[in-house]
Length: 259
Ligand code: NAP
Image (cartoon, rainbow, N blue to C red; front, side, top):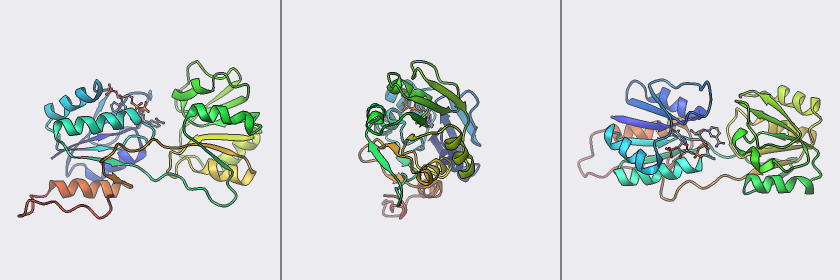
């Protein structure tokens, strides 16, 4: 069996680890990060050339199942995966870590896009903003008058806000570290995507403690009809289910952990 994992996330690497070498795994990375953390198994890097390119790739490499384990905000890739899998008649599963849930004391302002997040800042009285939405979306904040602390894995390129300090770093982050960062830079507002996961959650805890408002960008939907697993373990079970000889009736049982 040959499985293609569309990756770029911690969960994608964990899934490759769970399946390799029992199953032939190829992980695909977009090639955005200069020094990516590489998963076990085979790795390919770079775009496929849209949904049609991906469908061709699936056929040419005899792929039996695709797991879309991209970041919850990698919307184009997820839609391309849905179209390509349908075209090539290959089963597709989306692996999506659950989103974050507010708890008592949180001051969250939910918005639909980075542009809405930028618009919300003035109304919140923001002056010093900690921006953790990644270097690719900085253009949405380019006209904002506030001061920004931008944290990203690789250095961002313009357009970006005029008053920006860049901090190159990648998670996981600690609560103590996030507390110190908010205090050192006198941050009064945090902007984040609802990425979910433990590695970058401590900033939310630190913001709650400091009484700082959080502008949180909602996730785009998973393409219609694509089943979703919440953990690498659930996704691995879905793959193993497909690796078994077909049941005598020819019907496959849905995996209980998968929606
Ligand atoms: P995107 O906007 O959904 O995709 C843009 C294009 O990049 C796709 O059409 C595809 O090119 C290529 N691409 C994306 N993911 C790919 C993959 N895993 N393998 C091969 N090609 C891929 O994607 P994005 O938001 O820029 O994210 C790019 C990568 O960074 C993803 O792998 C994602 O998991 C990771 N990431 C994204 C975020 C985020 O906030 N968006 C955060 C952390 C990590 P073609 O059309 O040519 O195939």
